[in-house]
Image (cartoon, rainbow, N blue to C red; front, top):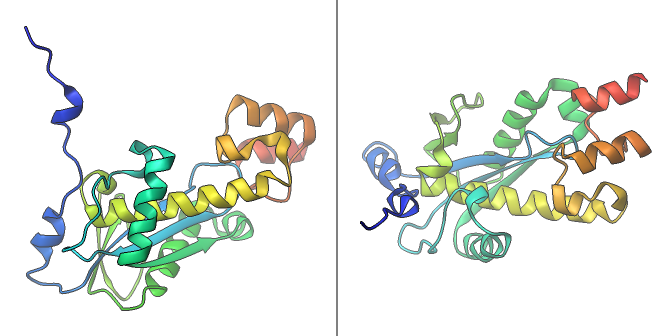
Length: 211
């Protein structure tokens, strides 16, 4: 009996949501973030308005694409489609919390688009407060090509940032773990203590500072 390929049966992002909403909205952007969970660095968000007649092959949730493929698609998106990027700093994360900082980064990304969209599709179950109409899409990066494109842009740019600051603190190996709480990262944190790039409001870092 032939085995069923589960991967081939999985639904990949498409334009169904964009087409559905196009009856009421002319310009639709997708928004996603990268870096809510790590202990280190800013949170990045991207907003993308796709040229629906020139969509690159292979767009998917950024976590499901290899780094090489992500970079290839990133180059095509940023060369041929409208995009905006927003960043919320470590200081802002510590001051207003990671959720609000993520919303701040999303708002900045939307505001940095060359044109103002009529509707913004946001990955997740809640959206930032903005004068533009927004719609939350749970697991949006697996459903909407606009959101998936935004996830790729945000992920590639944040990864590049983490690789840059890794040169300053190589003991933490951020070029590999991207600031997430791996055993290696925790060991380095215990040995060297927090850096200026660590989120002091995050529990593992806060505990180290209280010792």
